[in-house]
Length: 199
Image 1 (cartoon, rainbow, N blue to C red):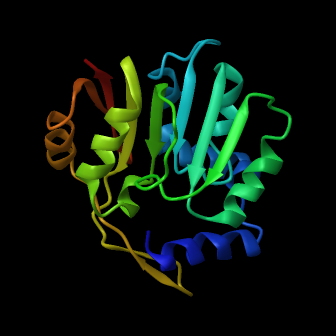
Image 2 (tube, rainbow, N blue to C red; image 1 turned 30 degrees about the horizontal axis):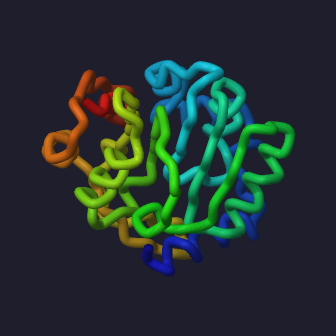
């Protein structure tokens, strides 16, 4: 993972930018990528083992972890993971990892894997899709939200980081190259949501 991406998210924490504690209007805005519609597609139960790729400060995890049996989140930014640990400290079923999803050895499989607004940071998307498929239990579910925005940079005004935009056509192709099948592709105002099952 690009060191600039890690520095970008570390800096956000240094500036006390934590989406878990955003005011309601901003939370509603973020839901345009991955709100209740996104979470409901996971069909979580108290028996589900779940992995979030790009857990951040736990913006989605605070909503998904209480719905499942065990929750694991991974993120490249140590400061972000430390903030997520604080935000999720009351959940007894959570384990968090600071690492790169593509190279980290999870030593287990998961019933549900999901990711929102993270694949734009991953250059080798086929490798990421292959790994997600490999980590899923048979019959497991992969739910992915990708940004409709096709800009190649995130420009915060003080820094600019390179991203790798996704298109539904490309993501469909990557998924079709794995052992997952696409069950549904839906749209929100700002995102496309893919729901897949490992055959």
